[in-house]
Image (cartoon, rainbow, N blue to C red):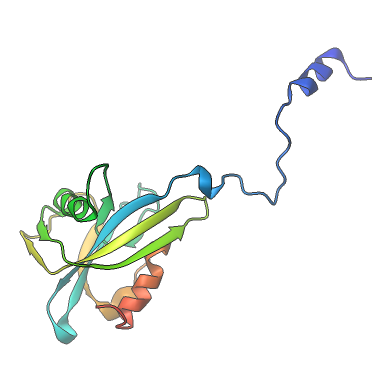
Length: 165
């Protein structure tokens, strides 16, 4: 026979038990995070290179490679956000070129991101590493050899195959 204490605990349960096949967090519960990133190029023809950065080990998705950029703040355009991020991350003053592509990606934890990529051919200053593990210039063909964030993988294949830029 249940004790009064056990019966009291049972009566306090208000939420139904979640079925195992239901997601713990719905994508609707998390807002879409809008970010911008730069495809910074140098050179032409077969010697053309693109600038990539590696996240620090202690960051979320640490040691993954990405293109420099970041979050769009309220009241900023995408271009303003990217210019600000490049100044903060790399100490360069960039001329933001055209938007190349926009990618939406949902991570396994339910977080969704929309990344708008812009071409950057011109900038003032030499890139200074302010926040990354490492950063480097690499040929387009070498991009698939780096461990990029999963949101960037389709773009990486397209760049390496010459489908973009």
